[in-house]
Image (cartoon, rainbow, N blue to C red; front, side):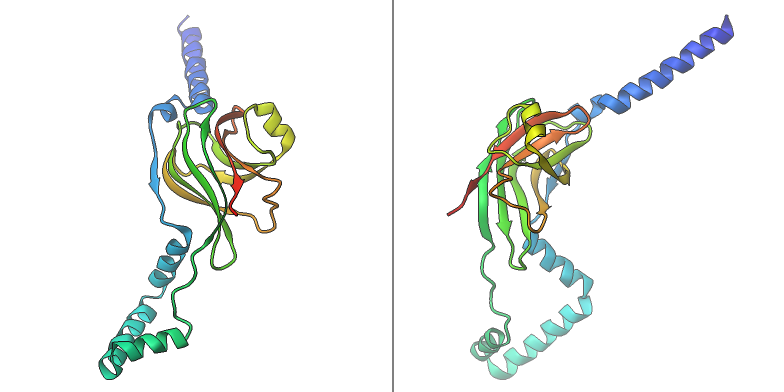
Length: 203
């Protein structure tokens, strides 16, 4: 009898662990907040951090030039040497999130960055947490029904970095944005669309 009870207890523990792994009830009540800077700014900061000696040398040289030649001349030399302020990244498409399976809010915008890459940025964003939540670009004008989204086709941009806050996702080069016109916050484990943002081209 004791042996049978031990087996049952062991099976219950295994079953409980499996159910926890599948459903992750803790994820429903524990939020993860992120606050990523705009992707161009993040790249510039990473480059500067990777080359502290170069940054120090540049600052020292700039200080010396300003002392010798004055602010105006130094500014002109910066412009002539290609160090002038770059143009703002272009907004290609944008849209507001609406809720589906879970309340979802915020704005999704796709940018073309100064180096030619494209990035999806979520701002003022919030949704529910959950197991295996992904960010999809869907080949449809909007995402309401899960079956329709799966039939339309999608591109997986990666796991959701946080269910609250501003965050960035790389958009694959060559992806046709006239076809992939909606962002979906998708629970891959249960094929559930938490919320979606239909994208409108920015003219």
